[in-house]
Length: 257
Image (cartoon, rainbow, N blue to C red; front, side):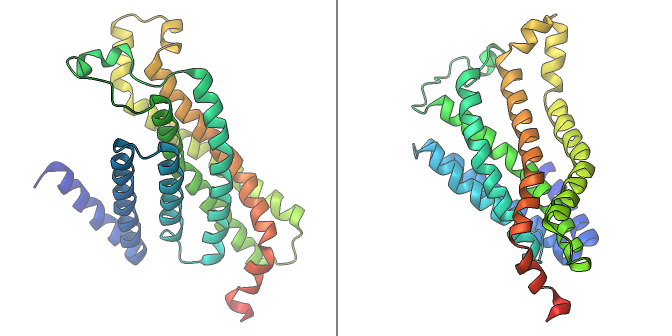
């Protein structure tokens, strides 16, 4: 048994013990998402247009993450619509930022690993960079959308008389409570993943200006900042979508049937 297999079994056992049936479903969704990501890599490697692959796989991953993470369709449908809207908005932003940043491809720190290998893969590195940025932001967007949607569904269950303005205000209040945690999760994930690179910078006495213009560092920072922006947009977007679906949410309340 490999280390990864052992850790995977431990994760499965803990998820089932803590989450029960929902924990098992969440673990299954994790495996499905991994499979679709691997499938996306294969499609791009076989020269299927990266943007088409990104949009198709991105929507699939959002659907799996959201609909397998919660049984209440009132919550999941709202979160899914909001996530799709945010995905379309940040897609435009990513194209603009990646075009002007010009950080696609490999940096000088990758030279040792790439020595003797050809980097002429026949695929636009710009499109690959856009694909990477989009896919890396999906988890944070789906998580924020689910948190806001579930909170607003609970509010509508107990206070169906609330106006749309009050509902949006409640959504923003919920968003303020989760934004800090989400940002810290993304930041420390980035910092932990690039700790070795930071040690490299320190050991070779990189100046602050050199670090801020390093291709690898900037590319990763762009991914993190895009995820931040996606989460920020998700909060009001989910609240707005809930106001459009409030009648459906109230009518499908179990107590009203």
